[in-house]
Length: 108
Image (cartoon, rainbow, N blue to C red; front, side, top):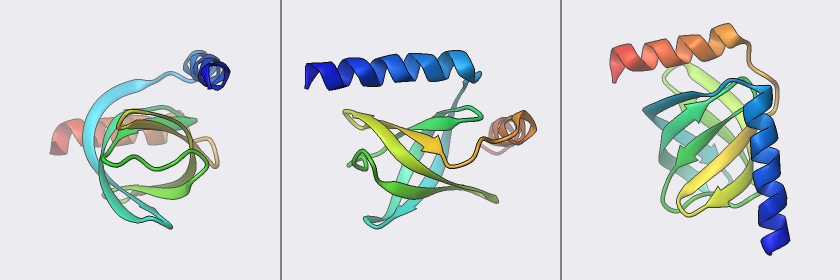
């Protein structure tokens, strides 16, 4: 288990280097085979996001992240406590990410 956690951490670090992350704190919803889950969007990048929810979704779970008119499919890649990281199915443009971040600061 320790080895799996190390490789997840290495992957997270690689993602941070590859995509600029924007730290935010916005209400969002996640839809999956487990139902609808209210969550907090903690950060977002072109490749994925970090969310907080109780209970978190399991690793490998496919989902749809929704925040107002923003919807993007993804998959859970790691879980730590109530936080979990998702990888988007397709990379978002930086403009889409910045739009989400700027709309969030205006509305929340």
